[in-house]
Amino acid sequence: MSRAVPGPEDRHAQNRGTDSGGTTPGCAEAVVTPPRPAGRALAALAGLRAPVVWILLAIAFFTSISGKPVDGVLMLIVAAGLAWDAGRRALRHPGPEGAPARTGPLPARRRRFVVIALVAAGVAYAGVVGSFSRYSWPATAGIIGLSTVVVLIGWHGPVRSRPVGGRLPVAGTLAWIAVLVAGCLWELGALLQQPSITTDSYAHPTISTLTDPVLAASPGRAVVLLGWLALGWYLVER
Amino acid sequence: MSSHDVTIAVYLVVLALIVLLQVLATRTRAPIPSLGDMLTRAMRSRTGRVGVLVAWAWIGLHFFAR
Image (tube, rainbow over all chains, first blue to last red; front, side):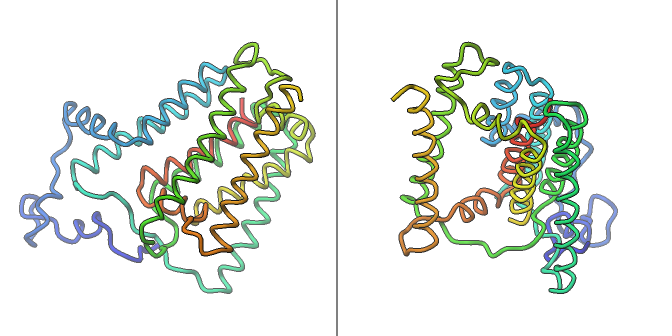
């Protein structure tokens, strides 16, 4: 795949800098000596400034104590990797982070083919993984495998370039945040009012409890998985 | 109304508000960004993009994985 716009790494690959034996002067800040242990620790600490890292660490903690250690460990790994990556980038290239899109828009015919192939693969995936019992190892492997691929795709940058929008309206953004935070707090309140964190409550059902009847049968799981896949596709395309 | 009903009613209110905000954002000239705009803005940085995708992955893990 070719990148539409050369990113910092590409530019530095072309201009090696004078310290590395390159013949082209410039880009001296890109010449980075191999990080020492102290440098790596400093990078990770710099990465801790990213709020997302703290949110992931909180999710890892709460997921682990609610009886899902695999989820917790995965979240911890992503949080640590993101902290290290964000810190490393902040030390190398201070300023706004971001990555260029990797591809331009596909030709309409090719895009149609890709869409049909992805839809067919998604339906097959939902049918197969949905046929497995919830919380079984085959279902776990299917979810973790796909999630890993999608997160790695996102880690390397947006799939398609999109115009950089202007600032979002403050009042409207705050309205969204208020509604979403209220929903999360209500869910958290229901969770904390359960007899224990792993025991459902009829009086204070969480969203997970309410969806249990739908996910109890294979067709319900397949439909929900299709929705989850569609959401993932939408997000990867952002 | 029992606690069960109240709990579900509040979930429905939150869902209705989300739909309302999205409709206002996409069908009117109200200064409200759509959910897509919010996600696009959040995913402009690498940490934001990975964070949103991990949130998506967590949903799958939470409902299906061990």
